[in-house]
Each structure stands twice: as C-alpha cells, then as structure tokens.
Image (cartoon, rainbow, N blue to C red; front, side, top):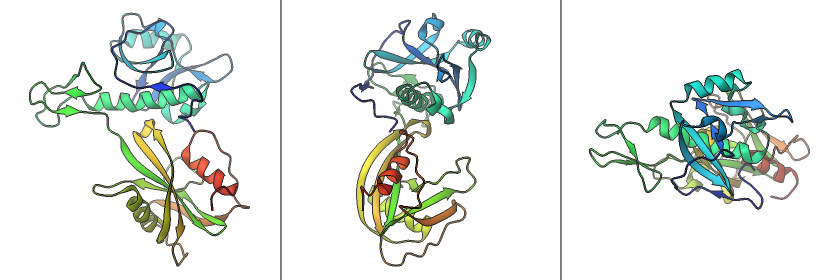
Length: 279
C-alpha cells in the first residue's frame, strides 16, 4: 500500500528544521500540486534549492529526506517554476509521482496543508491562531483554544457470501471502478458498529464475524482507513442505496478482475479475497 516504505521509515514527530537544498518542497493550491515530468516521464516536485528565502514549513522526513510545505510569499518562485516547465496537477493523481514514497509523502503533506489552511482562526473566539513551538498544534493566545490536525476514521468493508464478495460502484463520483462498502465512523460508535451500519445503509444486509484486517492513512482526504472483512448474516438479497451507489452486486472470485495498484487498501483487500487468502 502507499504507506509501505520497506526498510525506510517515516519520522512525523514535530521538529523545528530549516530546509536544505536537497530536501523536497510541496506547493499546493487547494486540490492542485505543482509538479513537472522527470527524465523517466513520471511526475516529481521541486527541491528546496528553488525556495531560498521563502516561507517554508517543515512537515516530516523519511529517513534523511526532509519534506516541507510552502506557506506564503512564494508567488515569484511559483511563477519561475511554471516558466521552467512545472505545472499544476490534481492531487487525485498523486499516484503518478515518480515513486510510491514520494506519492505517500505528497498525500501526507496535502493532509497537513489542508489543516494549516483551515486552522488560521479560532473557532471559539475568532482570533488568529498561531503555531505552537513545541508540538504540531495551532494555539489561540486569546482564549487558549488548541487545534490539532483533523483525522477522520472510516471503514472499508469486504462483505463475503461464500465464494462471492460484495462489490460496489459510487454514484456521481469521478472514480468509476469497483470498490468495497465504505463510510465514516460516527460519534459514539465503534469501528465494528460502523461496519454493520454502513453495510445495512448501503446494501440492506446484516453481517456477522466482523474481523479487522489492516489500516491505512489516506492523507488527501484526511482519513484513517480501517479495513474489515465480515460475512453476510442470513438473507443475501441486496437493497442498494441508489443515492450513494450506482452498482452493488455479489461477484465471485473467478469473475473478479482485480489489479492491485500497490497503493490502496481497497484494492489489496479485493486481491487477497480473489486469491483465496480470506474466507
């Protein structure tokens, strides 16, 4: 999956750090990222060497590779990069970056970019927030309110019915491939209760034997995805929520056409079911 870095490790603890020339800088404009095509034809991002004197926010490092966010006062740098062949690309296409590690870093950076962007003013008193100097937090000097990065837990659910699994397609979204039942955890709810509720709401099915599989950070949407498998309990007739889904159907292992992209939890769960690694 996108966060699996082999022997390399993400160090996401808060630090005060100045950028070095070989570090990487992410420049976002809402849901766009500044990139260029590398020598291998894949997308890459600029190094800190282009940003001398710019206002950069240290985010994290992967081993010794530092990653920064351009905060402000970088319009002239952006224009120069655009003149030099860089261009704006949708953050939905981060998997097209030149290697998976950079794609994961960009996704995580976009998560933090969204937090910084929406955490400028206090939700309690309306005064401007300031970054804390000891941890990753925004603090209001007026009323003492503190704001941490938002992480929204959501479940991905593989519902099994013998040799078949419930596959879905979203309604009204750009993503048109098969997916699994998914949804956000509500207040006062366990992840397992979310599984039962989401399957009932979207497919009209009761489930049992809910078993945790794996988790995955999904920074572009500020989510922490929790993967579960379960079995249909009793009646297997699907009652689809047509507002959420355009397709909901039982598909056998032999009928599944799954290409694991090495990125998403959903694709991995579909693949291991097809391979008979989960019953």
